[in-house]
Length: 315
Image (cartoon, rainbow, N blue to C red; front, side, top):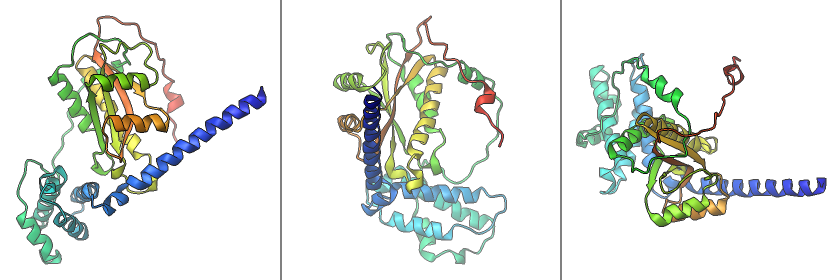
């Protein structure tokens, strides 16, 4: 029996190494530097935009960002006509204009800025996107505690489609979740296609207790192309988790229950589903979510939580 268990454990270990090796290969093929070698600079642009914005927030104002602005301008010059209407391009133009305006407002010597940067910024057109800095005032809201502390995972839902206004609210919560250097690498997909729903229902683990006829199905992904170096290899999952949690809290605030359905499939199944969903090669599935309007009464696990003193430690 002990030998049998050892063989089973060895098999499990081999699967872990196999799938981890595949993850490493996909990461190496698709992370930020590899994408830049293929001419894809969107996430580099986002990093530079975020860096300039952080510099503009410093209390001790001083001339800054010349090299970053020059790098950003050089990247923008490589943009195709299609890319000039992209979110990243517009945001970059907006932050460059705000950055140069800060130099003017503070009386800094703009002759320290390369002429090609200034000339490029002069060609930038204002857009609906506003980058730079803004004033924020905290407004106390006790409803936040009600939303966060009252949510439980739900598996039983009304047979009603989620209203657009309610979904839009949850999506706005998704979009404002913290993101590593504001790279905004996560997406959420609403799966309506019948064949895809059937495929996912056969693939997702732990669907016991769900009525798929009344369950609205979402898939949350992250983009490895946004990740900069090996130390960031887990940032995609972290960012997806933050966005997904905001999303389900937004749903809950609108009377919509939800449950995270763990995406822990083997690499072969993962690749098959990503292909079926037509995700790009650098895009990975983080988690799937089942959701729907709460029924009047339902039976749920108590899901007792650990005491606070067991999860909080002062070092």
